[in-house]
Length: 366
Image (tube, rainbow, N blue to C red; front, top):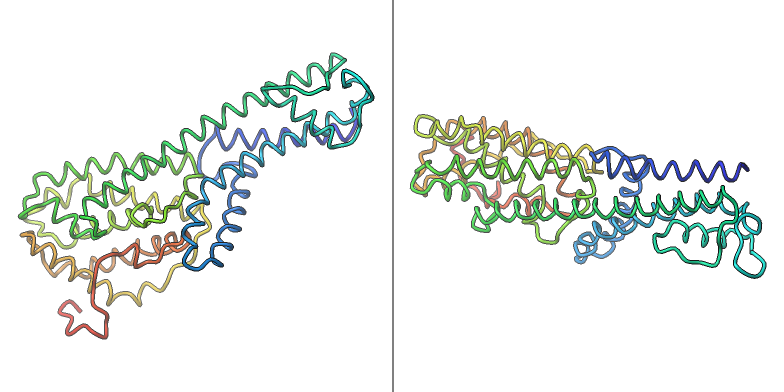
C-alpha cells in the first residue's frame, strides 16, 4: 500500500469518526470537525448579514438550512477525497474502464471514488482484483450507511425544531402576543385564582425539557434562527425566567404558597437556565453588559409587572423588589449574550414597557 493510500484511508476514518460522533454519539460539544465547520459557516453568514442592514435577519434565517447543506457536502467531499487517494494508484491496472485507456489523473480518481460511494453506482470503471472489489464493496456500504444516518439525523433535527417552535408559540400565546411574563401570569391566574396555574406550568415543563434535550443532542438546532422574535430561544426563556422570578418574589406567599413553592416553578427556572447555558457554552455568543448599571431598569420592570398583576386581581407586594433585581441580574446576562449573537436586540426579547429614567417621576421601590 502506497503512502497516498494510507493517507486516504486515514482521511476516510477521520470523516467517519466525525459522522459517528455527530450523528450517533449526538450531544453538544461532540464531533471532531463538524462543530468547527458549523461555526465557520455561521461566522461567514453572520459577517455577510452585517453588510445587509435591515435585511440581515433574512440571511440569518437561512443560516440553519445552509449549514445543514454545507455540512453534508463537507462530509461527502471528505469521504470522496479519501477514497480517491486510495483509488488513484490503482487506475489503469486493478481499476480499468470497460474499453480504452484509463486516465490516471486525480479528477478521474474522484469520479471513480464518488461512483463507488454512491448507492446508485454507475460509471465506466470496474475493479479487476479481489482487493479492489472489496474496496468498491466497502465504499458502497459506507456511502449507503452514511446517507441513511444523515437522513435520520436531519429528521430528528427538524422534529426538534418543530417542538421548539411549538413551545415558543405556546408561550407567546399565553402572553397574549405581548411577550410580557406578567400578562402570562395574569392569564394563568384570572381574578387571582391559582387553581389552574400549577397544571399549566407543569405542561410547559415537559415541553421545555424536550426542547433542552433536543439542543443537547442536536447542536445544529443552535443555528436555526427565525425572523420573528417570538420563536427565539432567548425570548421564550426570558419570559419563563421572568415569570418564575415574579412568582417567587412578587406574589403574596400566604395566598399563593401552593404556586410559589411548587415543583413546576422550580423546574421551569432550572430548565430555562440549563437551555441558555447549553447555548452559551456551545455557541459563539457575545459578552454581556454591566449588571449593576441595570438595577434602576429592573426595579421599574418590577413595578410595571406588579401593576399588571394587581390589575388582574392578583395579590402582590413591594417587599420582593430587591430579590427580583438580584435574580434578574443573575440570569439576564445569559440572555444578553445569547440573543445578540442570533441577531436579536434586547428590546425584542424584553417586551415589558417601562418609562425611561429621565421620564420617570419618583421610584417608590428605590
